[in-house]
Image 1 (cartoon, one colour):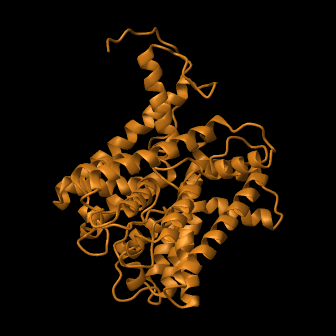
Image 2 (cartoon, one colour; image 1 turned 120 degrees about the horizontal axis):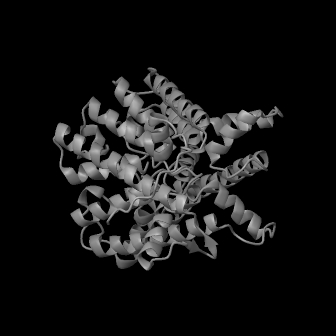
Image 3 (cartoon, rainbow, N blue to C red; image 1 turned 90 degrees about the vertical axis):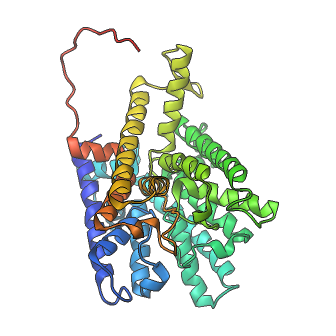
Length: 440
């Protein structure tokens, strides 16, 4: 992990957030009053592809303001440095070694070979996937509105879904479409494709074209964990919300709503049911899914599914007394497992500390506050609400909103990268001390 390159990526995100807030503050971007902190909150939520809102997107922002939010989502989902580098490549400018290092860190690419080619494939994949989503959603929305309006709504929601942002042009999000098959299938597919990461999408394409003979262990872990978390999430939702949030729906529509909510719990902030009606048990368990997030190298935030997978692998082999952890006939290094433990530990401290501070100083109930903090860190965007159409964060003071902004930023750039920026990278010592025996 190159600290200097990470700093460049972090500063680029900060610059984009500030510039986005400046544009949103322009009189032609919003209706009525928009404070600096609310503009900064909205810009951060868009750039960090979270979806938490303290202003009603379709009501409080003009068409221009909505376009600014959409552009911030697209650039934020991809990464500012990645977008700038792609433009340089398209202009046939030669990339220096430092440019390649920054691009490598931004895309979570494992090496330097084939980096530019990979970047081109990434952009082609994004364009194709989002285009398909735009066409499908436009045709569906055309049934409810004019064609031009349907194009805008289809474009906005397709890009928002693929980038796992959860921003919607409907004040009630997608609750009006809770039983609609097209919306409940297309939106989650876009979210999953954006959440599994660009490397996985590219590798699956190469595997299908028989350019590679075997999927990497990384891709297998991501696909397996994604499937497990979606299924487990659905089962939990159905068991806990059958007669609560899903009350009044037929059994097939309950399954559809559970599928939609399970996909959104980890990575995006769309909702088709009223989250203020969630049971306490479901609200608690959902925080674990939001903390996990999506896959590295994609548009999702959180700790990442690979981190949780390696932690489980480490625990399993530790219990068995086996020091050689492995999966899919490939060994996992002790350092990777230790790093997974560290990420989970540090992320938990950040979120728990933020929740306690918010709950105490904002005088808000602990569980909804924990739900909001985990949603911000996981860049999910789901919220129990402020009693209206806004997120729970709308009830916070300016300092409380800044706390949520920091959590969103941390979840987007990665908890390990965020911590390295604060404390710096440790220098490896050349001194080895005698091994101590500690009783556990």
